[in-house]
Image (spheres, rainbow, N blue to C red):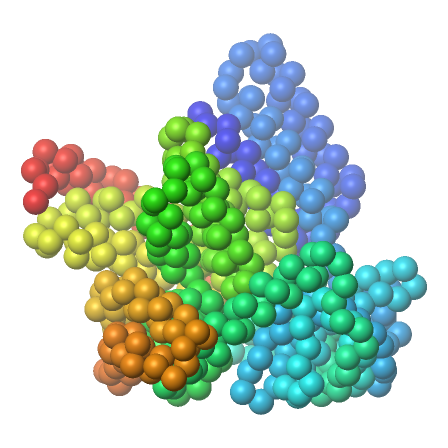
Length: 493
């Protein structure tokens, strides 16, 4: 019995339970008490089941306690401000999200000794930067849920709550008060500034919408694609490659290691780890990118120390670290949930599927097909529950696109650098990137026009999701076992 996985499961279960019902300190004390009882029984009976129950309950109590310390509502000092027009000062707490018609700025504010965050939706001018102190004015409201496809409700309030945001000013006016101060603010402002300069380099080298797609592949974000193309990518099931995913981060990690191969091994791994960390922060620290960044860093650590790297353990360790940092991600962040499930499907499902598609002779194409099918099947039940969006062209579209993504990222990176260093010749240097990006855009646009490319499934209970994953697990473990054993005896090509 692996107590590591049991502990992580227990910790996540405690967070999940406390996010649904506030048990309070007495509720947390109860699993602690049960854990002590099972531990006592283990001392008497020497049964592993008792120690397993004790570990699970202790971890669950820890998870419940961590959830209690996470901010889940607007502090009382700010309650009287809801529904009023106000003017206050705050610090820019994240890289501003620049969109076509506005900028969305996260502000950290303080009142009466209490702190919180609000989201200000303001005109693009004046521009602000991370760590800058600004004055914002407008009407403060609570974020509200809104209706989504298939009779669903998108809990926009909970989605923002995961980032500690409990208020929103929709038509805000901002003006700068003081520049960033402090080492951390200056360092992050410099990092974000480098990202913005690179994005401008992409725009110098590539026409739209290729530049916007390159930005999505390399630094995340899909706003520049425009609604028609964004909708097409969503219908084709390709939107994950546009909003920086774990797949993109792992490509970057491998690319950094290859570029640093001339350095001593430990030096290369250290620089690569720092580069991955900076890349994830600059990209906005989204759930999938952060999870992939943590796993990549763990893999680098394993290489540098000579220890074996277990992908499944690394995934669950990354899950534990992310939940300790932000427990609200477990229930309130769909990106976090889908990223974890997709990676779990890749680790557990891809080897099973690959062993059963040996009719695909080319090893690279077989691996791409196996990982794509595994990830698609893994997220399907949860994705249908959350969005209702069913795309029957998603699998073939991904199989056509994913093999060219690494090259598209490489040539887009070269194009972006040329756009910064030599903008006059950047369009010529960007021709290979433009060709690959146009291919991806063409596949997405064409796939979205096919019959049944986009269907909406009506809302259904979460119990159906649980049943679906139970069936996927059963089919993966039992019926395919003989096939896997047969495949293991078959020479690979």
